[in-house]
Length: 134
Image (spheres, rainbow, N blue to C red):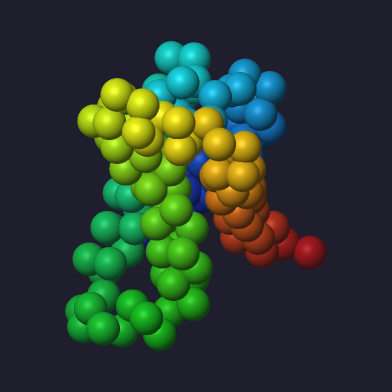
């Protein structure tokens, strides 16, 4: 529906602004090292984009048709690293807090790679730009 699409576009815009704010606030290599406000907001965005993805998937009568929808594939490619960075890395870091994974996450190369994954989320702005009339 139009309301759902407009809400999603608004959240994409907020997420873009949040990414700029987060760069200043978050100095940790993984989310568990970030300030609490960063952790809360990141999780809220991931929850929203996951729900959006589930709703879009549910809208397909034949689920295999989702791979034919370029926007759905695009959203999937953005959501997977977002879930990995926010939920899986946080879980793995807390499970292996003995030092195994936390040392891995503090590695400069890995930290840079994770930040690049976050920058890929800016690609969602293409949806926002495409929604504006000329």
